[in-house]
Length: 94
Image 1 (tube, rainbow, N blue to C red):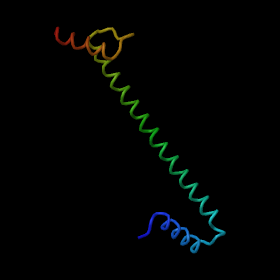
Image 2 (image 1 turned 60 degrees about the horizontal axis):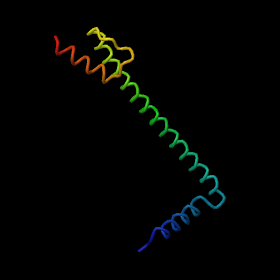
Image 3 (image 1 turned 90 degrees about the vertical axis):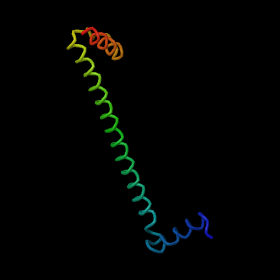
Image 4 (image 1 turned 90 degrees about the horizontal axis):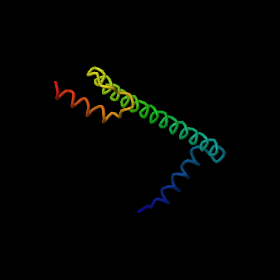
């Protein structure tokens, strides 16, 4: 049975045979750049998801504020939870 160190050594030997010892630094640089591009793309996607999540939250908040305004409830300086309670009370009264 081959362990992990033996497998890595065999793979390294195959790479040296395929590309030659002079090409190894170039190959390593290329792999490094590819990994960097992959990480950059990953960060960009994560940032887009965070931005989308923030906009979804803002839309929810604005819908609560819109509902409160439609019921003539003062919205300034109140949290979303406070507005929800007042909306529930106003709906019960009607």
